[in-house]
Image 1 (spheres, rainbow, N blue to C red):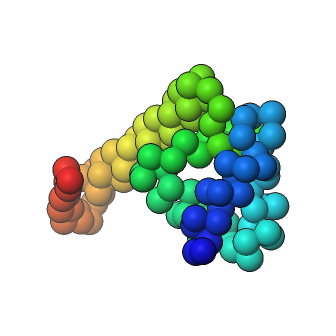
Image 2: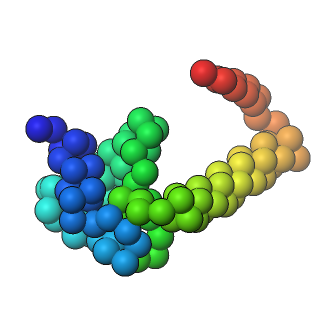
Length: 109
């Protein structure tokens, strides 16, 4: 079993519901992963429709729709902050004394 599948099964079996969340550092230790790799595997699971939730208490497999909704709201907030940072960078490139050529490609797949 690959680590991605093992993480999903581990969370589903041992950490279903917010009250059973596990800190990312513990998952990193258990699966011998660094933080970035763990986040990528979690993101991949989410993209495939597995309800892996997270908050300040750690990661957990969703038990309720509210847990899913709370994680979606948290992710929406993250997307907004990233978008605002991108907008600030584009603004900085336009307002610079030394203009920088900016190309924006949007992939809607």
